[in-house]
Figure 1 (cartoon, helix red, strand yellow):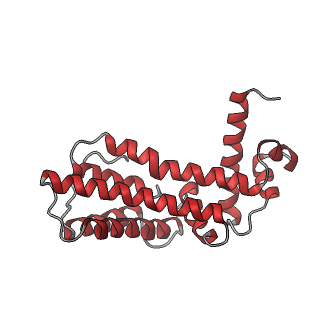
Figure 2 (figure 1 turned 180 degrees about the horizontal axis):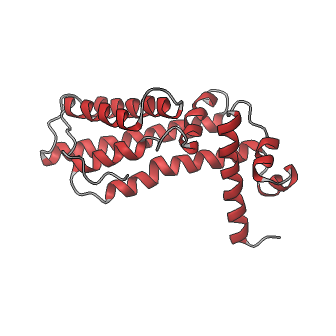
Length: 206
């Protein structure tokens, strides 16, 4: 039996293969064979590490949640001023570009809502984490006087999440919206909502 460290590496490789296969075939059409072919192993080898395809996808979904949740929280925590934190949260919540396989898969998981109780729970949990992050930043900015919010905190936070999700979907779909377009449009909303970003934007990861 493989050592725990080796098992962990193999499991990560399987998830990476699933992301690549999903980007090629689409989540609806993805099969365990597709993942095995992408990983260069047999179906049996995959089943040594995961019970079935859904177990692999749940792990991939969790990886996406960590990126938009825990990892983004860590980036935001590096900034002191709420305006800088907001700029970081916006940038880190968007895909890196059309080829961002992990973010593409996160959006595709939305189609499973209502069909898979587990994925539905993960989708709702991620939304709650997104909403809580924006709410905390907005409340902190209002408390320090950095922001003069033009409406209720909850409504403004909901709009940030909605814009993040909508623009992100268009980015990975290869449409006419680029990452720069999305950042500029969300920054405009931030100003209109009374939560202007730093000018020029600082502390935003490339």
